Length: 116
Image 1 (cartoon, one colour):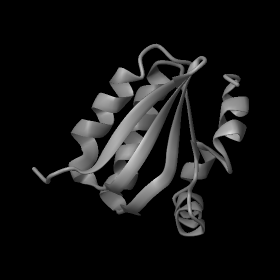
Image 2 (cartoon, one colour):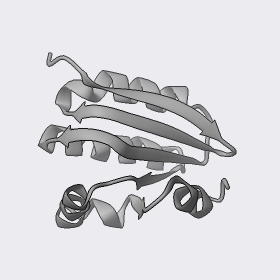
Image 3 (cartoon, rainbow, N blue to C red):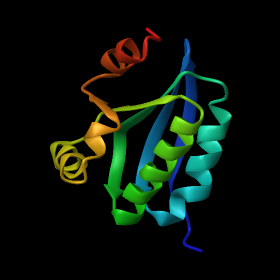
Image 4 (cartoon, rainbow, N blue to C red):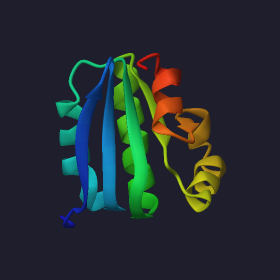
């Protein structure tokens, strides 16, 4: 299995869990990402903070789809902020932006999640 090259730190903000993404998100990140998701606990929304994202490949995009499925099973919303223009375009091309709410700032994402 590929070694994880990203860290995911979880902060609780009201009814939302904010996951601070640092580093490269690839297929090797699955275990640490899912652990971070589980440690967010019983939240109504999971907000991914991509300001520390260095790189994400197709394996990383696949992980986001897996995360989206898990969140939907729990009736949780998945939101994101801090995406560079490049990754915003990738989210649009893959239509992930239709399933994951994309925001400019943490405050915007928290407000959209109803957690502000």
